[in-house]
Length: 290
Image (tube, rainbow, N blue to C red):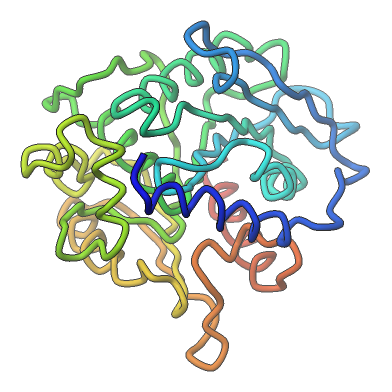
């Protein structure tokens, strides 16, 4: 593992622990934890399901694709954020996936497909309305979600992993993500490509994992957000023209200000009023498609 990835795992874990200090499961949420969705890796192929209590019947689904630079993160770090989404009347699936460099691309995308099939197969047990499936992703998770959504909707594009037949996103929310993978625009995060990509980041690999190359008119409607303190805040400027060209509906929001810049993936901090505002607006966006 590269030095940069090692530092991320240490530093980000410490920051996330501070962020979530004192948080507990909301009283109005029912949770099903540590459900196994795959057979390849019993440690990483686990997911949680969160539903609002005392709500019977099927609910629209939100699938969370967590961030972490492709080398860090798991469902535990996203549980409070995901439960806040469930409070809006959704069944939220929060999953861990295999991380680089121990598992390189396309392992995490293979896991996403297995989770998608799991959702379809367990719709009756956990009350999933599979006609209304949404996705949220942040940072590397926004990259993964947008690339996976492009693969599902671009039938001319061959990908090196299987896709879930019968699985479709009604809309997605892309938070503080990156959508055009180029060394000159990725800053320090380009170092992570040596851990994530089997060949270390060739021109062909960067093209293959850049969602903007594969978006078509069938790409799902998007809610895109960033903030002044997000080191990837210029990334939507490359995504939005592609969405416009293909006639894909989208909403673009910037939260905070130069005086109050917030930070990368601020929306996961349940102590912030801006996080509540952002997450409320994204859930209302999804509800428009129900």
